[in-house]
Length: 322
Image (cartoon, rainbow, N blue to C red; front, side, top):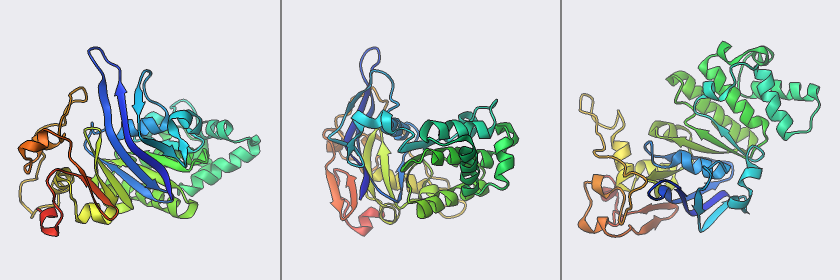
């Protein structure tokens, strides 16, 4: 069952000289009890999509959508009332998310007081339980600490505990391993997977790291220039990518080519959000683009649960691997 059901989401921001097209057309379906990856380069619209879900768009933002539903409710009307209570954010920079002059106890207690009617003793016990659930040793000591007294990995676990304290169904994890080294990042990803399995949570994982997606995600949506270009089960997106942009992202991974070869790169840049796009936004950077790709929007194609948009049909395994 889909917890998130979004179709043709667009967000325009007011600006001198005309609107900024922060999101052009985002289709996103997230099944309850899974981890869904939201993939793309910086500037593709990943964080803006999260802000729309949380009801945190800038004042004057114009939102459009054919469907914009969370658990059957119209998010346009109820996003602010669901924020924290049913949808929570795990920040990519825990050091910035935590108040440096307040203890961890105070910061988790603030969240508990905002979302639960519990006496102080019960809130303290709940805070210890939440920190223990994230794998932090000696939770009582952590509660007495200030953020600067904790390592980056410990700070990230505290931020995850804060998100859990709300009791939310959906956690939006915005680049949760960016500020961590590889070993600690792997531990945090394993923790998120365990929380999904044990607590039935749903996670929307925002990342540009395809390795992160491969490790923990069940399904994924690829964004480019504020538009969904491919989505489906993780096994399909990784092993049979259909959109040229997805293939280019995979080809740019460090281990994609033989040892000693030059790393692949995607030439060009993402079109700026104020630029009008008549055809496929990726056409100027796509080696397979045809003249018609720049003239009209690409059609949506589907193979089972795997969906992508491309004017050039690439339906066979040989084509998809090209």
